[in-house]
Length: 264
Image 1 (cartoon, helix red, strand yellow):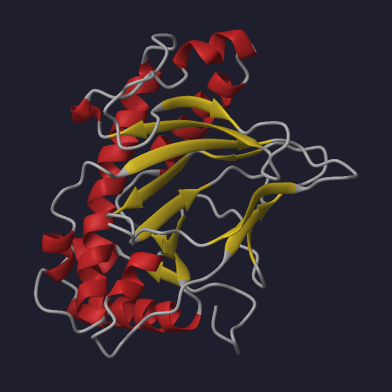
Image 2 (spheres, rainbow, N blue to C red):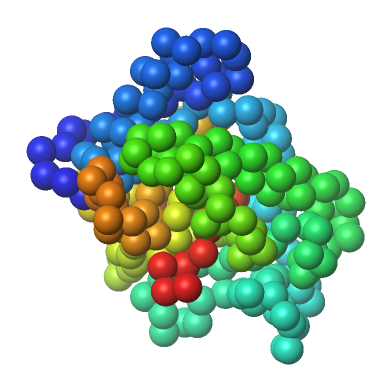
């Protein structure tokens, strides 16, 4: 994160990109450009994904994590799966500094996802979340492409293979006197990460707290942007983590990682 930043991450209204509003698009693009150079992340609203769908995903994810442990373990990753990452339910080991459990999914078209049949809408809601977040990702990549002065359709061509895109529902355990770490400080080794969260809070940058705002999505610019070394408008990335609240369980129901890893 760059020095001299404020105490609130910028909010960007994406509605002009769904209408013929050139002035609105220009303003949004300028805000994103500044946010990426200064913070490495920003918040988007009016992005095309309904708050009702987001709330439904939160509710159903919470219900899944409240299942008995033996029931959740029925959906743990399958050994020998060809998925880019272990799809299904996992929990951080007790000795891990990160205190969370999660359910990892890929595009429903790939057939890797392990989800319970009950409630029946769980799969359809997560599938719809994945589809809509993918569309939002393509739009944000297009805006970044323009912001950075890259050749037309650079990110579209770079990320043409979308099989490594994934979505994770994360449940953070309540803080204790000894520990309050949901996810350790880290940088995402991808192009973009989208996160929306419940009302517990705790999505936290090193200096700036990203408090929950209904219907909004946090966008984190990942390390893959740094691969574009030969271009003048290189964006900074931020270190981020999740700080747990005492007595509460935090839930980030969907974080879609868009693009190949920086090591690819």
